[in-house]
Length: 240
Image (cartoon, rainbow, N blue to C red; front, side):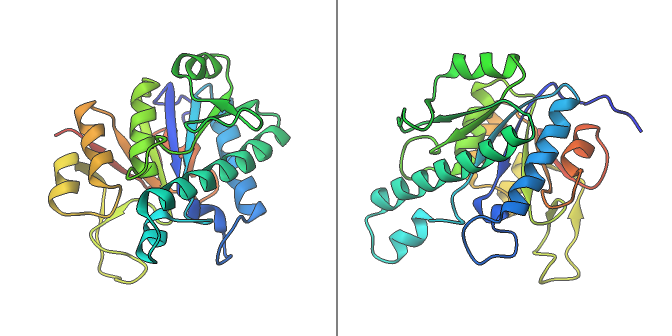
């Protein structure tokens, strides 16, 4: 088994829901620690890692808007939820001996650094994990789009999307047993087939910057490191 990673610098996108474990909402400490352990193992391979974590386990802006809240206000609340998740991940990583910095697109110096692109790059060059919080800092943009934006700004070799299943399927494999798993797709395939991977803005931004997207199961222990070696089940989304 090769220990040589295929990428030097990557961004890992984790949904807020992934941090819930089997809970109905909030954070499951065991799940957070499991993801942190996988990040630690990838760092040990010599890969530079940054993360974007969603906030759907605490508050989802779209749901708030659907319930009658102002959409921009609801989105700002969702951004604050991502800061809470980022701090939880920082705590888990640093307990494992991985130096970590949280950078927020919404300034809150008492708990984390403001987002500064060149400072973030320097942290990564020094082997620190950088967790980007508060999305893009703007309402109406998802954390998927924020992940594609930060991965591009950081000059990442790939963006990894950690999901609940081991790749991209033609339908939800948890509901449809005949769902087909794709080994490889193009950005246009994802958009044309309306596959529920990331929103169209994130896919389009990745396509424009030729940023490969690798989709894998975040809950499979060691899967992050396996994908870095080009092994195990995952779906690669690239230009045709």
